Image 1: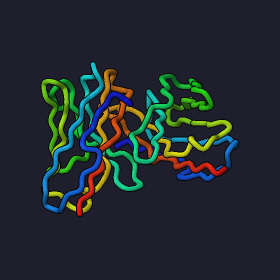
Image 2: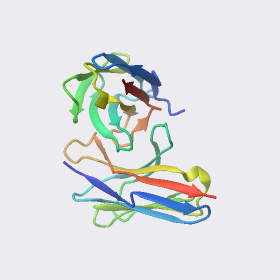
Image 3: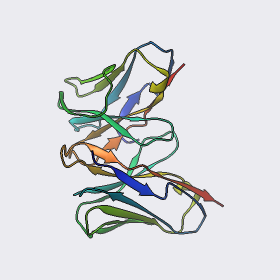
Image 4: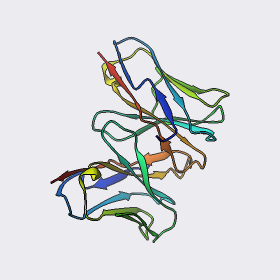
Length: 112
Length: 111
């Protein structure tokens, strides 16, 4: 089945730094979603991307839908302590469009 | 509050037992999804219902079953529980079938 690989697996950064993470797939996706999961909570949608090449921002977050449709990137600028959590990319399976496949996740830790 | 309600939030039980997890979707959403997240793992899709009918199935064990009722709430039944079933179980709902809204999860601990 389709797999989404995220890198890096984890990051330790200082408050105020910018963060970049990416998500790659062996197959094409028509939609890319980025979710954040706080400890002990459910994932929350951050950004949705629907078109190859699309660049979308949500506050300090910016995500891009790769031109090849096989990757996506998420950047966080000027990180703050509440950015701590796990960031997941996700995309709907082409076989069953209603089922989301989630990436392996990037765990972000922010130090003061 | 995402609008997706899951109960119970925490559940501790013994091996061999059976439990039922409940989910109420966001108002107006017809689709309900169940995902399993084991410790430090990603989200594994279990099953999806749309307006009462099973729509898609993932890696759901035969010991697990689910249903969606006419009022659109859903239940996930886990039986003959094993230690390895300890995990967070998430319910999500959707109206578009693409963007999912997740509940806060039910944490199951099997001792």
